[in-house]
Image (cartoon, rainbow, N blue to C red; front, side, top):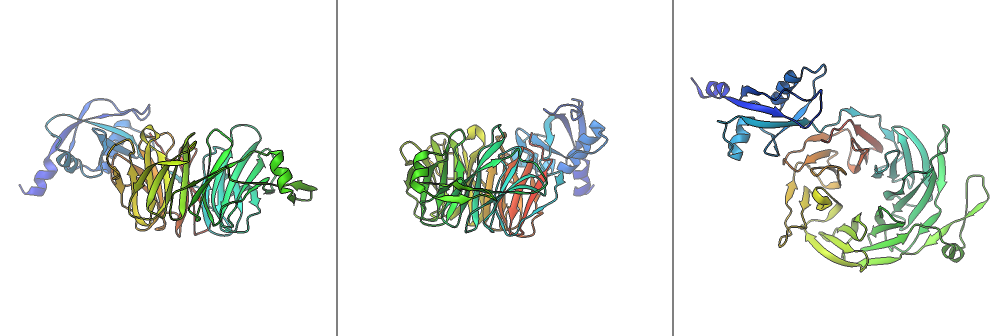
Length: 428
């Protein structure tokens, strides 16, 4: 018998187990399968055991690691004996099951925030922010900037009939908006800022809100990080003396705010900031570093270097402690600052073909994160394998921003001027 025939004749005894609930729970009994079966073959076998009306795509783990080659190759690579009955865990595959209708903008979509379960917030090169209640349905336009918007953030959206929104722009300012979400009707409401934040000496590149508070943090091409109050105070109103006109309304006061604190340390553009804990802010920069800042003292307590200009940083994963960052090469890097004595990444993902523009951890998973790239693709990752779980390539040009929305969707924007929503993603 030749070698190929011999490989095809090899069989392995396996038992399929899962944490999924019916109807996705297969009988827990040993079955015999070919050794050269791949993930797709395993998925077909489980579907036949489940007798589902509509086939479901599954992923498979052995000893906590995802299988991304033939079963035989995986066992050989991991030094696992095929003589015993293998226990293979299956989970629903992480991939979009639906692509929603794209929402067209007038220019590049440079920023997106999906942290609100009710709305999507976008920023655009036309200088306008937009709030979307669903694909194609823009409820509010946020106006006033004189330059492209580079970053957006929901400041609060918990309950009530209004949300507060922050926008950052290349016009060197940030603007704060109060949006009445109870307004109804088919028309789009135009909103002016209630407060303008001035102080950066160059384009503002990133803005993030304190999770449970009344502050926002911004970073800029002037190499600094600023903290700002978002509340409306009488002192700021009397100092500014600025007025603005609403739509067909009497003039209203428009506040101006100054930075409460400035963090200094980066030597190039501070491209992204995140605020994962009350007293901790992370930043990344074109000076090739990720820094962790102690908010009360303004001191940086951690420096991670990777030798590349960085565009994006996020913190999440196990213990909400892993730091992911990407920039001027195709590699998404992940560090674990809890490991002493080393600044080397613990994971490196290198399937993109161009610079990385965004990365974002899934809020409820230890393992899952996404990355977006100038190669026009968004990739969904799981720390348990080096290959992307899924590739979203619906954009027709560079992807400039991406975020999770409602836990099972990815929202993204790019140089094709579209907001796109990929939904039906199952994160186990």
